[in-house]
Length: 206
View 1 (spheres, rainbow, N blue to C red):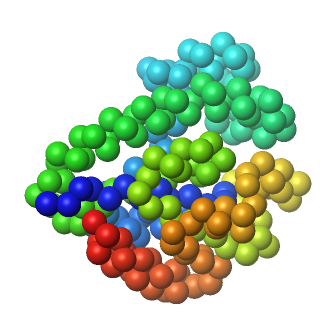
View 2 (cartoon, rainbow, N blue to C red; view 1 turned 180 degrees about the horizontal axis):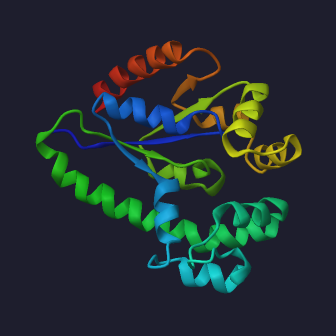
């Protein structure tokens, strides 16, 4: 029996990583979303909550005590040092939870096919955690499409959206780390075709 293949899924903000993870899930790949784990660890009962509030102040809180992620986002994307502060608190906790899930999957997927787990994490190349995976898959799209999607998705002005895009490694540079590439610039049907082809390749490796 082969070992479980660990796939790192990354790419630029608003390039389509989440939808790509969903499509792979339809094909039977077990998906783990780092952003969702990050959201959970910053809940009031989460492991990062107290430290984040101590570092950034109660002004990031909603009336019910939960962290307002859009307010926190405006702070950290405007100041690189503040973004690094947040990453230093949250990223180790996200990685620890990913490890816990992946370890449990090694046993749970022993009788299932495909033996492929995929972790969606935007900053795995920047953080160096891409080395933890057997295969790296990068999703990208043309920058003007990325900008338009981000503005629409998050209700941002063009300067705000550009600030967030430029806080990450340029997608074309990130592609240098890729074993597989999904170009999400066109129709969903075209993206799905690429995903299905990549899925078959991943299964052959697992």
